[in-house]
Length: 121
Length: 465
Ligand SMILES: Nc1ncnc2c1ncn2[C@@H]1O[C@H](COP(=O)(O)OP(=O)(O)OP(=O)(O)O)[C@@H](O)[C@H]1O
Ligand SMILES: [Mg+2]
Image (cartoon, rainbow over all chains, first blue to last red; front, side, top):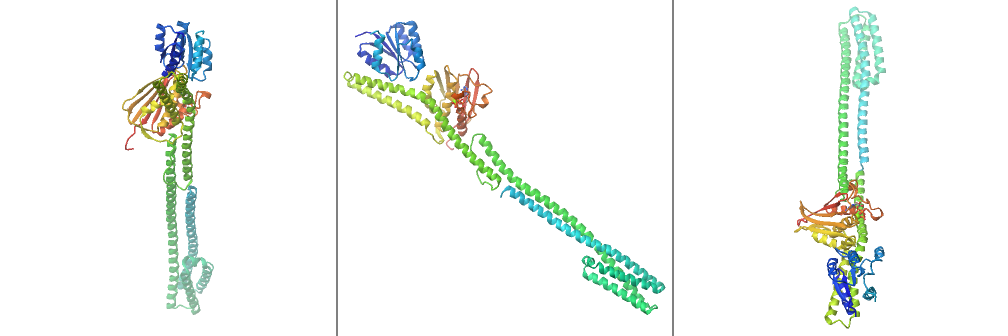
């Protein structure tokens, strides 16, 4: 079992709760946040291997989280989830920077597989 | 009756009056002519009588037979003259007088004949001769005098008849045209009143009795136009609502994805971890699913409420609640456009008398415009405030690109848009119609590059209404 750290950011509390419950079964250390601000504070004190973030949030949104992680913590992978169904252009733009992209509703199995790939497993 | 017919009738009446006057004037003139002709004849007669009396005097002075012959000839020619002008004279002085005149003349001629036969003077006969001549002359000059007076009377009478009928015609014409124009003006005033209220967006009807004339047809036409406009406006409101619905649906669809995703993730874990979950966890999961379904139900209900066509239904309502409901409906669309909202809802707002869904539609239109004016994000500030006079005030302020001053007078016109294919130009005109129907007011202030503020005033609900 791995002791990789995964951060989940989504203003929908259930998303974090459910992802955490499932990922903890695999042995990941999971922390959840409801907004970008608290998440970035925590990132400054703790290194995470994977950040899963919602794109659209009040205040600091997924894009800003992505930019901050890319510039400050280049080793951390970012997976983006979003409720926007057709943001093809946005996805295109993100392609180089994000590890993966999931539209809601999210398939937890696929998310887990993606995290595994991100960790080079 | 049609105005056209009324005018024709009044003209016919006046023409009739004029003809009648003409007829009387003609008759008078005719009478006057015969009288004048008689006066002429009478003058001739008088001259003859004068000559006869001259001969008579000469005879009585000189007792010369020749004078009697002369007289006899005179009397005969006069008698002939009387006969030839008989009808004219009878018409002028009447048959009795005529006969009297003739009999006097005959009597005179008879005396002349007797005197001639007797040859020689006789006191008695001479006296009778003189008396008869005098009588004849007096009679004829009396008649002449009377006839002169008659002519004068006729002239005087026709003068006054003409004068009074002239007065009557003028008075009649003035009265009739005053009466007709009064009716026309009254109808015009009604029509003007309605036209004004239509131009203000109130599609009223002309109430009360519709006259049976041309204006009646105009009023009926305007009434049906007004009704048609009202129907069109309702259709317009509905079609604009459906258009806004398109914009809203994008936001709402997104809004639905979140609870759907939540239910889906709960379900995935429930199946995957079924054996590992304890009873409480399973119950908690299902509770959450139930709550998420409520969320979906609420979103759908909002959308349906908004889209359903309804007749305007004015009720006492709390504006702040309406504002919040609308904001909820719009929230996702605003989020997507990266627009922040700030609200400043006045405390202790009195209820307003509104159709909630229509006002909601106005707010949707204004907020959509605000959002569209801030392509790269911004802030919409929404406020309610009590009270300006009998009205509650709503303000929707944005930090968008503003409206160019030359466009400001046109933004409430139907189909005015600066958005090309992207806008129908109906949002504000429909909103304006709705607010006017609420007896409210909507106005705009805008500064290019700074932002735009729409202010709405709605009447406070009064119980006694
Ligand atoms: N908040 C605003 N900021 C800047 N311009 C505005 C604003 N509100 C309205 N306008 C101007 O007024 C015009 C008319 O608005 P209106 O809502 O009637 O039509 P539209 O938005 O163009 O089309 P529709 O609402 O039918 O999609 C707009 O095209 C825009 O130019
Ligand atoms: Mg508009």
